[in-house]
Image 1 (cartoon, rainbow, N blue to C red):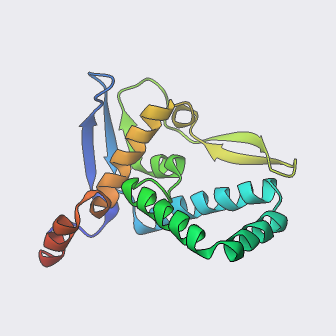
Image 2 (cartoon, helix red, strand yellow):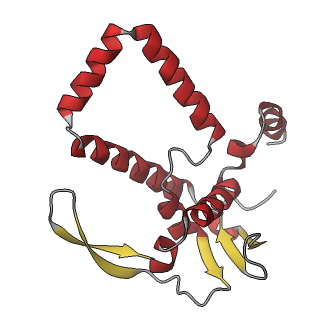
Length: 169
């Protein structure tokens, strides 16, 4: 049996898009996965607030009331799409801030304070890893997918594989 502690699990991977570079991932803890999920939800609700908040929510409720069957079909389709994309529901940057322990690039993985504006125009200081924030879209997706695959392999398994894995626990 492997250690129950996420921090005990490290994996070294070759970067398929940039040989000979490598990255070392640490398995994310349940707490870190929760933070990544919460960050994604907060971003979703902040986006709703930016486009009208309660007014938009009311319009959505009215739309659902007018066409419950069409809405159910759209919700079912969205659920199917989310099931095909294990990253949905997780903030990829939060995943990577916790998962990447080292890489062979000269770019630092240190957290640094960055001044940012909030949605309502206030200045706040947040801790960021500029190298991770600078990743291209495809590279960000690859890194985040591999981090999540290490932390939650069941998201990448078929139903049969999940059932077999449960029998072995």
